[in-house]
Image (cartoon, rainbow, N blue to C red; front, side):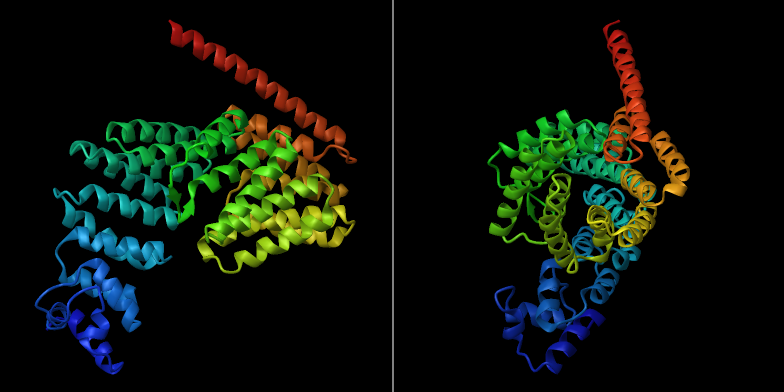
Length: 436
């Protein structure tokens, strides 16, 4: 009898459950008995079922399962389940030794892909890029185009998380082309959505709008991260409209997201984002009371999120609370919230939020305005893409409008215009070279 079978039998006996009660409809009584005696090994999904019924820790049994099972594909499926449950750190030791076992097998591309996803969850982006590149090579060599498209997609997402939008757009575009080669329509739609997000973050709002509208118009039941993709596209659509100062359209798109998520029982982190975004739009319209209630609703929903996700998202709410306190003439509370938000933004390397928070602190601490102005200029200079710099400087200029630092805001708007002119020159040069 193997250790895995012993653990299962001991747990079943201690709970006073019969073989039939544990097996349920997942397997036969005889099959479960054979698993307990070590004659056969359970499939990954059956092991998950047994752990749920007997209240056993899946991560502990996964280690024993990996030591007794030689098939790397089965171990990968189990690790994927644990990652989805937020246990990326616990499965990493199992996955890091798996590529050697999978070498030369059909499971090799999927193993590299899963290892890359785990590294992404742990914010180890350089390691993630290496494993995604390995997955792309292994999948392309075997003409497994669907897996190659998934790896390119994940590589694009990892680049986007690092703020490397140019690389992200290139990788996601390759993913769409590769997915079409393999006939994977679902991946193409998902890739369009992620491309929209990249263009949005890079400040190319019109392109983002077109991509999001294309996804919204498709009546295909596609989900991303357990959430209807159409709802997420409307969420991005609202942000794109807001950045174009189309507040009514932004609110309409955002309210549609809230209705869709509530009706689909997909409440959680994205619903919290929707309430947070609604607060942002309302604050710009001067609706402080309603904005405050939306921010509180967002924070309430975020209490139930996993720690890896919630830290970055709470940053958005902290920034808006600082703005809310400033508009309600509570400078001490506004400064406290802005300083806390700046610490979070620096931790997560969010350049745009750092810029917004420096503008708030400039208004709250006039004696330190030169320091905050220099920090904003430095942050803008760190952005790689010209489109990002145009968006960044113009956003800062808008934030400083109608404040005592409007002259500083005008300087940043002038910088945005210069960057835009440089961008036009670059585009003309690129078109000329392409035509040669």
